[in-house]
Amino acid sequence: MKKTIAVTTLGCKVNQFESASFITGFTDAGHEIVPFSGPADVYVINTCGVTARAGQQSRQLVRRAIRTNPEARIIVTGCYAQIAAEQLVEISDRQICIIGNGNKHLLVATALKKNLPELTMLTGNIGLQKEICRLPVRRFRGRTRCYLRIQDGCNNFCSYCIVPYSRGRSRSLPKAAVLEQGELFREQGYREMVITGINVGKYGLDLQEGQDIYSLLDALCCNFPDMRIRLSSIEPTEVNEQLLTTIAQHANFMPHLHIPLQSGDDRILARMNRRYTAEVFVGVIGKIAAAFPHAAIGCDVLAGFPGEDEAAAENTYRLLQGLPVSYLHVFPYSARPGTPAASMANQINGKIKNKRVRRLRRLDQEKRQSFYRRQLGTSHGVLVERRNNKNGLLQGFTENYIPVHFAGATSLIRQVVRVRFDEIKDKQPIAHLEKDQGKNEP
Ligand code: SF4
Image (cartoon, rainbow, N blue to C red; front, top):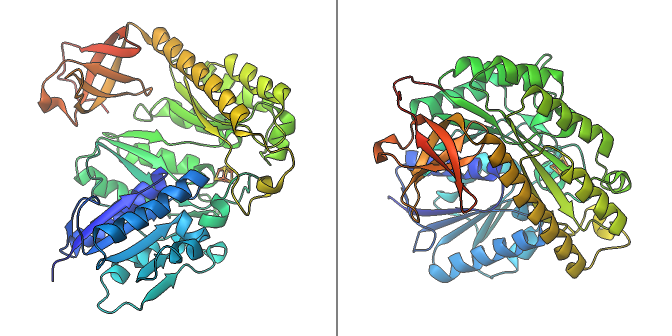
């Protein structure tokens, strides 16, 4: 009998990819995907545990599903389910099924099982997981760019991070399976693949000899010349000559790198168990900017880590202020039970933390605007994603990740078109279509 299935997802691109595979599985089995806000026979909540807030949102979504249809089957998966199954079970005394990150390939079959025991727990010890779950995806609903998950887990154990405890050790999808997934996306007409994972720089180190992130990116660019290949993020320790050479060799490798910094203070970096110094980080960014002057360089930064005094916060601010980065993703430190940092002395109070976050977010705005100004008058390929509801213009990202708006026909959506970026209006990059749109480019 056809069932109605509602899937909702919190968190990172890897979670988004995994939910897209659940939807592929349910659709292939002949079931109907319905909005999470409405009634459904089965609710799937793909949770996130990276911050206390994400954990709270995960519990709220479970309660909402139970309220919307008390008779429905509730399937909870993802990082919060992996690390806090007890808290989820306590939410309600009715049937709930918890599936850990290592068993996501069992989710669709389990959700459709005729008889499911009152309480099903398929969490297991994620730390012992050797193989990555095989989760084929056909479609990314409502998305023009698709995420291709190539790796899961992490061995780095940064002291503030819960991910190694919720996703286990680094595990890679063999190259053949990655290219197979890429082929699925090409058949679906996607023009851009965002290569993602938890720590992509460690790709292949758990596979046979000779497989690593550099050879995989090279293979993706060669096998899909008509698609844009974008890397979601990579640790500074994996940015080297080989990566820069791979980017330089392929016109379809997007000049955009997102690199977590977290802190610009060596004492704090050591407490975070990050494996580089501020000086090394400056060197990495300098190499990228020298090799690709128009590339977008994004950075993650954490404000308010335990022990971050005014001097350390200033070191982070000054370091970023002096670097040619294009944008920042700023996060307030959130203590995660079970991580070393959560029990460290000198936890920073919320008021100081938020003041530092606001200051770094102002710097983020300055960096974005100065990057846009540096790009004025340049020509770019844009993958058109949709029409903006407010200004009615088409919008999409350039190769170097500038979110441009421009006038054009709706038929251009999902196409890559050439625009000239020639104006910044209300902090928004505005462009116009270039004449000869005949040339089909990646
Ligand atoms: S590299 Fe560090 S921050 Fe990133 S997932 Fe691994 S442990 Fe977490």
